[in-house]
Image (cartoon, rainbow, N blue to C red; front, side, top):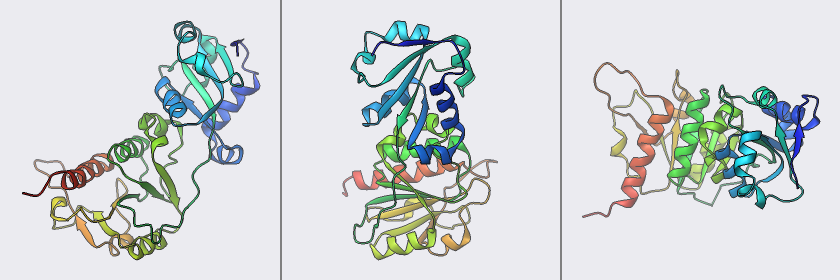
Length: 270
């Protein structure tokens, strides 16, 4: 479909995009999501999401119109915006030159009893968008099968988190856990060991045998993992720190342990 040129902020699709950015309930109700940036837009398409509308700056459209844009369905509305309008809809200080509205439904919960997943990540009240996005990206890179996040966590489909994932969020399963205690009981019924990352632990993270099916719990940046979840864990592990640093952020802590899991599962025993 040929692109339309838009110069008015009264355009209904522009209003829809802005509302999707700022209102999670509206995203869930309409089963749509707003994405900004070429990486996010392209990763969403590669992951099989269907775009409803794509917005471009004039220079981006001129540069890419003979490339991947030709592969878009004729049903996708393509709109070229003035620089002023694109800046208005952009969440970033430096607009990313392409954005889109995509059809998307947050995954529904699945019964995991008996499925025995090999690697699960549980995020307990992780509130920083950068941490949430980075750890989701690491989870996708390390083969995590499902990421659960508890109430009190930042919205993983908010614009800042989505950008931090660089599109990796569309390459794994992500579910909100309304009842973490029930989730833990189900994991234990599936014979999955629970490992909680806790600065208070006297055992280091490499001391656990991660070749077994494992669920790793990472906690809130300030308070760590809720105590009622810690006591349910089979193991608590800490990351040794030297110097005057008292803690690592959630994304770094999660990455350290996840890559130890991969190391143990990859390196052959002597």
